[in-house]
Structures are given as structure tokens and as C-alpha cells.
Image (cartoon, rainbow over all chains, first blue to last red; front, side, top):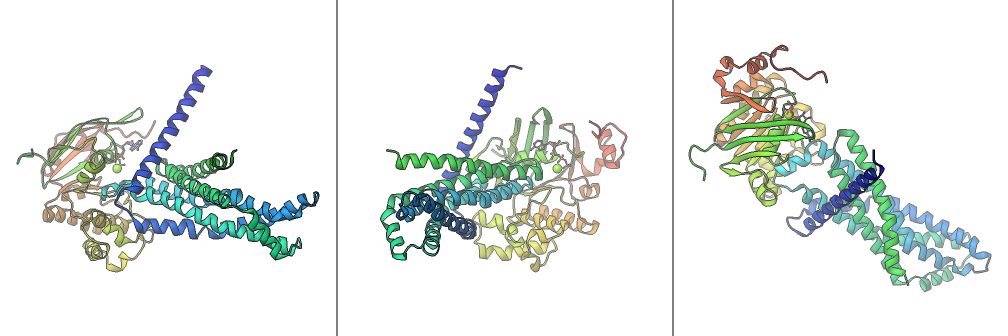
Length: 257
Length: 259
Ligand SMILES: Nc1ncnc2c1ncn2[C@@H]1O[C@H](COP(=O)(O)OP(=O)(O)OP(=O)(O)O)[C@@H](O)[C@H]1O
Ligand SMILES: [Mg+2]
């Protein structure tokens, strides 16, 4: 047992896995832009990702906005800077919390179910059956899911932005005794277009990543029910990690001086 | 290229190993146009793998598969799709799409190949279902609502809906009652006769094999050990075949029940 060889092997395996993922992503993207398209499948995925994730995203952003208002108020009160609460809430929500929380929630909800669905289709030979029926499974199964994730997460985050800021507003008005006009005025003065846009760019990237990881792990799963379970777990864990990594990278790109 | 004597399918020296386990070790098999060949052989001998190699679902390690005289091993993308468009496959496990109702499953290939619009494909699908003994009300159900035998019949309807040239049946009668098994046998015979299709079937069911086969080939230990007309199966003079068709536990075939 040569420890250096073991490290080398692990490193090569990592490179190989990354290469496979990149090739998979490239193939999926090329299928998104080349016909035939499957509008029915796309629509169904969009509804599944966008519409059915609304309650989860709304609840998480609502309570995040509320708790942010409360916490930042206790902090800022020490410096008699309570006026900054509205600004902090809206910045934190639009730049960070709405995209990251929505991304993580969708990873848990959608990423896992994509991996499980495609994994089941793989082990029951449904993916093989597609290719015997004049249909490219990458094009029919993977491309619409990735496109739907990419398109729908920004919409979810936009909704989350509004609801999160609204959560801060509720706490600000009813708990912290701000005047509604002042709170709204503060919010408007703080939020810039760039804050919202950076959040939406993040959302699009996260949506792409969540669908990609769900499809990748599901598509390649093997070994029956156990393999499908593993695929779902891997999809959620890997997309959660990638979301946090890319969150940093995109923030750096947008806001680094 | 394809002359009159050219077989529809010509397999030569097909090899496939999964890891260290060598499954196919030089399969040679010819299937003539319009012929119905049945492959028999013990469980796990690689019958399904052989068929999947023909459809490009499994990449063989070596060997050649000529379809109408043209090499099909290694085809990808549009070329592979063009070859597969002429083939239908009944999967051993059915492999119905469980997110689509039964009729859309059956119509899937027709719509995907652009032969029919979704609306126009529905009557064709219901017609295919009727041919396997399923009424139009079954068309609206989801696959999960069907019994195993019904799923098999739906899968059969799907395999033949687009009227392919070459049809692969992977154990079409397992899981069916004897009467329905015979209906399916008749249907396969009829498909081959009426559509002029070439059929390659896999089965363990000797009654079914005798009924649908023009020729029987026996796969054992990664090779075709015997092949001949169905009328000669009882006098094959081959110990493997004799043991198999009589279902004897003792003989040259040793089932790997112990590791
Ligand atoms: N994707 C795969 N990965 C690894 N091994 C495989 C794979 N597919 C098949 N095998 C192995 O190949 C061998 C042949 O499998 P195959 O499904 O062709 O058997 P079969 O002859 O169809 O048997 P049965 O009559 O039970 O369906 C089996 O031992 C199986 O373990
Ligand atoms: Mg099999």
C-alpha cells in the first residue's frame, strides 16, 4: 500500500468524475438548443419546479425576512442606528438569502425527485426503451429539466424577494414600531437594481446546477432501489455544496472591488 | 449491398464482458428476412445482453452486427436512431413509461418518429391495444394500475405499434396465464406473417418457442451451441439442448447456484 499512489488514485478519480459531469452538462446544453423540442415535457417541468415550489420558497423567505428584521434591530439599537433595519433586510434578502434559500429548498424538493425519477427510469429500462422509440433520452428527459430549472428559479427568487422584504416590513411595523411610510422609503433608498439582478443571476445558476445534479445522478444510477436512493442523496448533497460554492464565486464577480 | 441471400441480421464474434465477467464470448447468429428465430438458454447466459447490443444499448467489446448488410456496432447519434427506428423491442420487464397513460405509451414511437401527430396516433394506439386483447378503457389508465400480465401486453402493443421491420421479444410470455401466453404467441406469429417482420425472441417457455420459432438457437457459455429448425429440436443430438428442453437438473449445463 503506497500512500502516494492512493492519493494519486483518488485525485484521478475526482478528475474523471468532474470530466464526466462537464461532458454531461455540455451534452445537455447542446440538446437544449437543438430540435426536436418537447414543449409538453418542458411545461410540465416548469410547473413542477416553479409553481409547486412556491409555498416552500414563500415560507422560508417570509420567516427569514422576519427574523432578519428582528435580529438586525437588536444589533443596530446598540448604535442607535435602527433606521438601517429596512436596508439590511432588503439587501440581505435580495443578494443572498432569497437565492440561496430558494436554491437549497429546490435542491431538496426538485433535485431529489429528479434523481429518483430518472434513476427509477434507468433501472427499469425506461431510458433504454426511449432510445428504441426514436427518442434521445438526453433530449427528452434531461434537456427540458435543466432548462426548466434555469428558467424557473429566477422567477421563484423574484417572488421570494418580495415576500422576504414583506416579512421584514411586517415585523418592522407591528413589532418594532416603524412607520410604514418610513420603512418603505428606507427600502427603496437602499435597494439597487444590481442587488436584485445579482440575486437573479445566482438563481439561474442554482436552478441549472440543481437540475443538472438531479439529472446526472439519476441518469447514471445503477443497482436497483438502493442505487436510486443513493442517486437522490448524492444529487441533494452535491447540489447544495455547489450552490454555496457558486454563491461565493458569483458574489465575488458582482461585488468585489 | 444486401443481396437476396443476405440475412437480415448477421452477428459474428460478438464479445461482451462486464468487468472481469465475460458474458458473450463469440456469438454467431444469422436471422433471415421474415424469419422468426428464438434464442433459448439458461438464466444469465446473456440473451438480453445480445439483444441490447443490437439496439446499441450495450456497447459490445468486439464483433460485428450487420443489419441488412450494414454494420451497426459503434453507430451513434442520428445513424443509430435511423437503424433503431426500424426495430421494435419488448423489454423483459416491460419498461413502460410510468408517467404516461397506457395509450400514450403505445403511441410514443409513432409520435416521436414524426409518423403521426399526437391526436392521430391515439386511434392507432387503441387499435394496437385491441390486438393484444385490451379495451379502449385500459388506454386511459396509468401503467401502475395494470397487472403484470397486462403491462406485458401493453409493452407488446408498444413494440409493434410503429410496424417495425425487426422485432425483438425478450420473454414475451413470462408472467402470463397459459391462455394469454398462447394469444401472445399467435400475435407474434401474426406480426411476423402480416408485417413481414423479422423476429428475434428470447424465451424459456418451450411451448412458446415451438409455436413462434422457425428456427431455434441455444446460447450457452457465451456462444451459440446449437441452432436448427424447430422441427429438429427433439432430435438435435446436442446434450445442452436436450437437457434444456426437458428441464433436467443433471446434465452438461451446471447452474451456478453455488459461488
Ligand atoms: N449492465 C450490466 N452490468 C453488469 N453486468 C450485467 C449488466 N447487464 C447484464 N449483466 C450480466 O450479464 C449476464 C447476462 O445477463 P442477461 O440479462 O443477458 O441474462 P439473460 O440471459 O437475459 O438471463 P434471463 O433469462 O434471466 O433474463 C448476467 O450475469 C448479468 O449479471
Ligand atoms: Mg434476460
